[in-house]
Length: 171
Image (cartoon, rainbow, N blue to C red):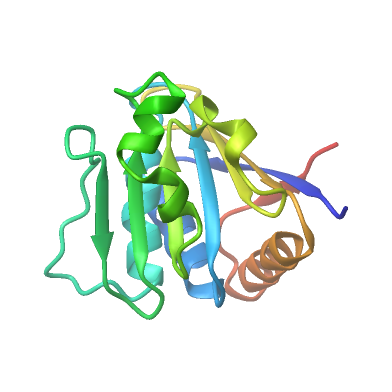
């Protein structure tokens, strides 16, 4: 199976959103994005940018679905935003229909995805967001299959052309 890892440092919330927007613009197929990181690390800011890149209309304000658990938005490719912060057991995932959501023809962004890693398909995109200081975030992107490896390559190429956020391959 193909895999690739890259590390990205964003220096503001707007750069984290920009990274999400750039990724969203490159997505042309259903995809699961598994987001992990502590509270305040930028998971929701990333999804806000992702929504913009996917063409979600501006009238939809993207917030973390901590209490509703799942939000769905129309766009060039539908976006389903899932927050598993309050869930702890496999039965909870079944109750909200998570298995069905993960198999939809959409982009599914799952916050707190570390609670269900064994349920994710091999070809998903993993993002780990780490707080460096008040503004700076270190983001590791891990592509788990051919489609996501190609997505990361397209994202890196786009950034070389636009002189955007700096990417660094990681081992």
